Length: 291
Image (cartoon, rainbow, N blue to C red):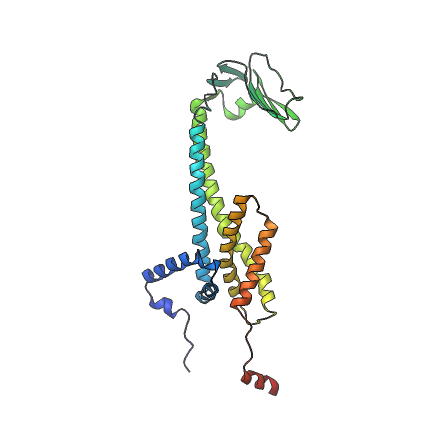
């Protein structure tokens, strides 16, 4: 008795280069055709779950690259705009040694708006943050750091900072510039890694969970439906939703509940169209009637 043909025979007979070329072509099709092509979904189901997961992986990589480039550009612009920030006008440096702050520059130095106060004064002219005017603030005096957060006023002795961070502590343009460089690099790595984990791992886990629910629904019209077919369809149907969410975000109209409703509705509609009920053949009906 001849064994049935393996669905992997074609893959085994093709070279790695041919498979890569096929996947690249499939990937670019997947960026567009899920918007309008039901035959694409049928072809995706035939290709299998592995192709769908690889597609989602590289699609998440593409999204992460775009987000990373945009974030790096914004950070670069922020760095250019912040070049004068470390100098802070006439304030050149702050040294905290043995619990006492010394300032090289004109004092008191104050920056504030309607709700926030930031000041440096070791002369004694300003000793407290005015809670009647500000909800949040920071004030450095000769021996104390004052903080105000939503009405919560706290005072910290500078000698405690020396015990924790070293003695002396020097804050100047060079230190702030170096800190900004380290901070921006670390932040970019966090954003890139977090973006990829969200767009691939979290999205795949969410789609896999929803696919279980929709798989049960498909049993009402097609009991032969496999779970992998539902998940594959969900992976590709998420592409139009991502574009739609982007458009909603640009217009300031994004709503998670609406997005979830559109995803589930579109998913069910596509499943119903690409996986129609399997009608019983006359031979099957006769056999069923004779049992």
